[in-house]
Image (cartoon, rainbow, N blue to C red; front, side, top):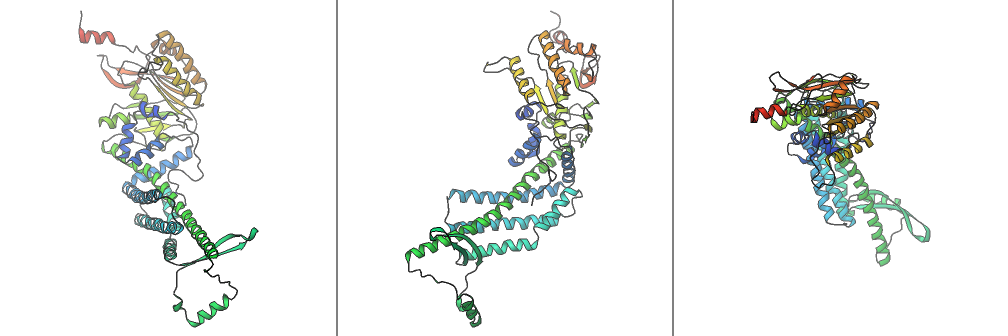
Amino acid sequence: MKAYLLNRRGYTESEDIAPFKSDLVTDLLLEPVLQCMAKNDNFIYTQCKKILLSPMTDRENILHRQSALRDAIRNKKTILSLYATVAEVVTDVSNFRSTNKKNGNPLPAVKVIRSIEQLDLLANGLERLKAEIVNTYGHFTGVIFRDFYDEFLKEFNSDFVNLVHEKTALLRAISNGGEIQISGRIGRGLKTEGFIVNTLSEFQDKRKFDIMESLFSTKVRKNEIRISYNDLQVYQDCMELETAGLLHVATCFEGFARELIKLFDSLRAQLAFFHGCCNLHSQMINMVYPVCFPEVVKGSHSLSGTDIYDLGIAIKNLRLPTVNDLGGEDTLLYLITGTNNGGKTTFIRSVAVSQLMAQCGMFVPAKSMITQVFSGIYTHFVRNEDVTMTAGKLEEELRRLSRIVDHMKQESVIFLNESFATTSEREGAAIAEDIVRAFMDNNVTCFFVTHIYSYAKKAYDEKYPRTKFLQAERTEEGERTFRITEGEPSLTGYGMEMYHEILGDI
C-alpha cells in the first residue's frame, strides 16, 4: 500500500526548479519560518525544509496538496496524534535494526528470531495506527484523507493483522524446535538444488498422535527415505539444508517487513510536513497575521495579492510588518526604487516567499493572492564582500547570476535585490539594461530593486512594455511609511537630508 497524501496518484517529481537552496534560505529569511514549523523536532524541520525548497510545476498536484492541507488544518489535533503514533513506530523499528546491525551477521536461527521481534514491533504498530484511524474516522471531510483511511482499513483489516500474529507465532515455534518441510531435486554432479520451503509447523510430541493418525501417516509416507544421522557427512548436508530453509524463511519475512517499514517511513515523512504546516498556521492565526490559500491560475504573467507581508520578519519580531498590495496582470518587470531602508527588500522578499509557498501547495502570508505556476524560482540578493578577497563584489555577483542563467527556463521568476550596484552608475545601468531585457525577451518575470536611478529613469521615460514602476513611499515630511506604491522612479539617496539632520550646518 502507498499513501497519497502529499501527492496525487501518478505524480512524478519534476526537475528541481529551485536549485540554489542555500540562497533561498538566506535571501528569503526562511530559517525563522522553518524553526516555527519544526517546534524543536529535527525530523519535521528536515522534511519541511526539503518540501519548502522543492516547489512544483504541476498545477493539479499543487491543488491536490492544497486540498489535503486544508483538511489537515481543520483537524490539527488528529494530524498531531497520527504523526506521534507513526513516528513512535518508526523510531522503535529503527532502534531495533540499528542495535542488531552492530551485532554483525547472525546465525540463521538468530536471524529468524530477529524477524520475529521485528514483526512483533510492526504488528503492534499496525494495530496502534489502525486504532487511531478507527477512532478518528469521519473527522476528515476531504476526499484525500478519507480515501487513505478507507484504503488502509481495507488493506490492513482484522484478518490481515491476525495473519501477521499467526506467522509471528509460527516463526517463534520454529525457533523453539518446529519442523520445516523442504523439497528439492538432484542436479548436475549429484548436487541438490531448487530448494523450496513447503510448510512450517510447530513441534508436536508423537505421543499425542492417536492410532488412526499414526497409521495414516505411515501409509502416506511409505515412499519416504529415512537418512541416518550416524553418517557425519550426511549430518552436515542435512544441517546445510536446514540452514538454507531457515535463511529462506527469514528472507521471506524480511521482505514483508521491509514493505511495512516503507509504508511507515512514507507516512511519517508526509505527516511531518502537515504537522509543520499546522504549527506554522497556528502561529500565524494566534498572532492575527493574514493568511490564505492562493488561487493558482492557468496561463502566465498573473501575479497579484493584497496585504502581502514578509513572513520571516513577522515570525522573528513577533509582530506584523507593513503589508503591501500587488497588482500585475501581464507584467514581466517590476522595477522598484526609492529611499534606503524604505521597505523595498522586505517587499520583494514577501512576494518571493509567497510564491515559493504557493508552488509547494501551502497557504501564503497574504489576505488574498492570485498567481501562476513559474518554471523556476531564483533570487539574486546583494552579498557581503568576499572575505578571502578572491573576487570583487561585482565579479561575485556576475558569477552567481551566470549560474542562475545556466539553469533558468522561460516562464521563470527572478528576484534581483540591489544587483549591479557595486560598480559605477554608468556601467551598472548598462549591465542592468542588457540582463533585464534578456529576461523579458524570454518571458522571465523579474522583480528588480535598484539604486541605479539612470537605468530606472530611462526605462520609465521609454515606457518599457509590460513593466510596472514601484517605489518606496515617503511622506511630504520625509518620513518613510515602508509601503510600496506605484510611481515614477525616484532618487534613492537622501544623504544630504540625513547629514543636515544629524550634523546640522557646519
